[in-house]
Image 1 (cartoon, rainbow, N blue to C red):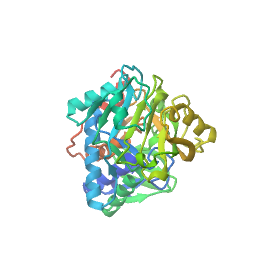
Image 2: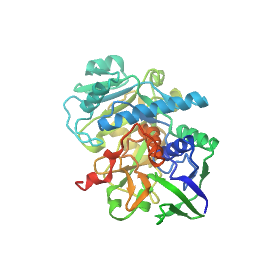
Image 3: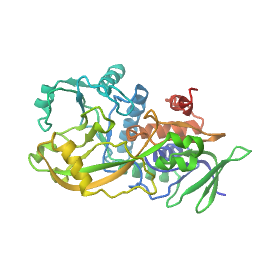
Image 4: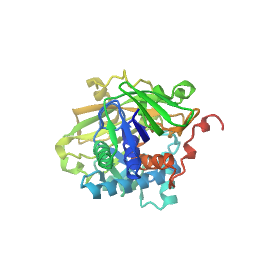
Length: 393
């Protein structure tokens, strides 16, 4: 059996980072993915992902987001690729709204609290402030805003490609179109990995299988991960198209009501005025499975999104759908990550997919996972993401 110091199962956002960081630390490392990453079957595609450093989902995420941005910038400097655009992020919500979004009852206030605690540059805006600065938004009059100038977006496919390429240059072996079927820790402590093509062994295995985590973890733990199909749409800009490019229009998160589905978000026209605006909401009504999910987006779905979320708030954006994509959220009961060992297997570490807000943390999380299995000092304590928090432990 081919042997390695570390095997990474799943090479999406976190897995590609863990592979790169393991190779960077001198480990013999193998990465295995059932597709050819970057791909569009999981949660790490769609041209853009929001990055912000004041995290309303919890203070524990802030150091991961800050470090991830540093890693993106280090990779940009080393490769010349464009990975991170800090064009600013605007969070909008009714000033006194109490709701449940990504595990936070008061997302806007929690974001402001995180910015104050960690000294993150920001501005708090009134409805009139937002109207004057960003007339592209049609407000109702009861909104408050948070603007973080150092936030923006990352390009997920480019980030994954760059980390995989760097890992390969450092000696990592990458196996694609290969599905891991079973993991087992032996009596001598090594881990045997069986795929649909071969057998492997390693001193340690990191599982970052995204929505496929249930198929490998199984048992009683599988109930902790629910997979939801999400839709992103690119709508054409009918008027004032030049006002929607990145230097004039921020990334945004707009909480428009107290239902979980009422967190909408979007991006500037990153491909120029004719590229359209990517806008999405979130749904938690129906679960799915990654191997059987409907990946086609129907015209009725796009029309419903436009009518409910876009038309009342973006007067310059037309109903013309340029394209649409689906992605998957793998959500835990508290909308945070789970990072822990496989039951009875000290040398198999897993990180769950990230409840719909993970890409901004992925570079640092991959670094921390690599450091943990290689027994190196890490700047992050991941124990707070352990699985025992769901058992009162």
